[in-house]
Image 1 (cartoon, rainbow, N blue to C red):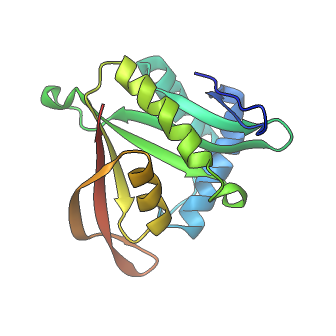
Image 2 (cartoon, rainbow, N blue to C red):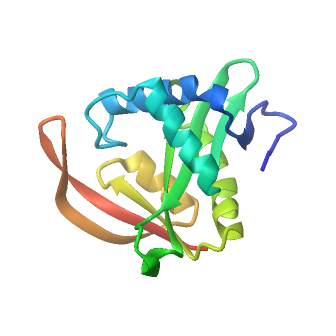
Length: 172
């Protein structure tokens, strides 16, 4: 699950527990400043480590984009979309990129190997739940082969405003 480029030093690799401080910093920045997550409160490192441990235990992919000179610039992971047996072939993913590295292809580099990991685990569909007003995330998902499967009008609420939510999907 590691990819490298001879020009670009960015390496996408399986996350390690010692990456979680960088991961939680990226996530918490998104919590406080973006609508990429509808969480309102930053996560504690111990919470992030527990989430990571659960993903590893359950065999789900958890990747980081690592620049050896800078550190972790983004992460992506997935898990079950819903827990009932009829949903067992659908997974939901998350992708977060450090604010300093956005619009530089980091998200795209994370999604492709995450999709391959989920496909290898026997998933049939990958879902992303995206703020429909987040043009960059919508464009990223479309560029990576996701379709807009549906739209929930004013289903989310953050920063004192209602947000439309797009369900982005890809058949694996």
